[in-house]
Image (cartoon, rainbow, N blue to C red):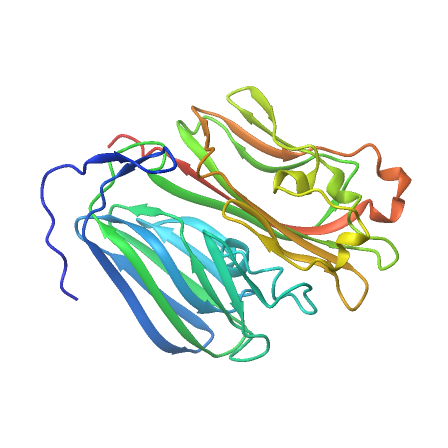
Length: 321
């Protein structure tokens, strides 16, 4: 592969239509492939001048294990579909749709074809000095497609210099207890960028709507911020429990519910996302994101418990060399 020529002058800072500061883009390169993956797909994005991965298209199983390493350090390890927002869309008997489309993530579900894969488009940045390596391991052989666009040239140091993502999968949680999703201490400057989460009710007699009455909060450098008046409110929606059960999916640029409703086994499965690209939440040293307990759960006791999975994406400033 021939590397693009770059200039030695620093990139120009410009302001995007949304008001955020953006850097004038440098030369663009791609890493692409169509391979028969014997359970595992590995590929690397690398350039001697560094760069930033800007967009992704990957056909892979959402349940597959995924590891992303940047400059030799692990930045994400978990289910592939938890990071690329397809985990709930292809759980057996998922409700509402066979995929979804939004500004930053979209999924096309292939169901049982080609190793239970799904097509994933995603737009989140991963800056790197040397390389980004991706490893995806599924349960069986599949035909993998990937097309990754990256911008050549190292990004100036700032809050968005280093990508990180944390995840958890199929956790049994209790509405009577607060749940911490992200806790950062003495990490320096950074910014919280997104949350994707799905929840599956434990009971076939009641639903997980009571569980969704819990509020989100964050604490940025000791300052507590109330993010929502309920779980679904954080992602832009209010609904009536029963009338919303057949709505399927609703997605917009920055918030949405790609999977929503009752499965054939009568258990409720909902998924939500919130992208903070236009209303970034910065921090200077410490940051916590948590789900507050709900003291009203005894009114619907069979909704007290729920299984959830989630992924939080955040960025940190690169340490001085």
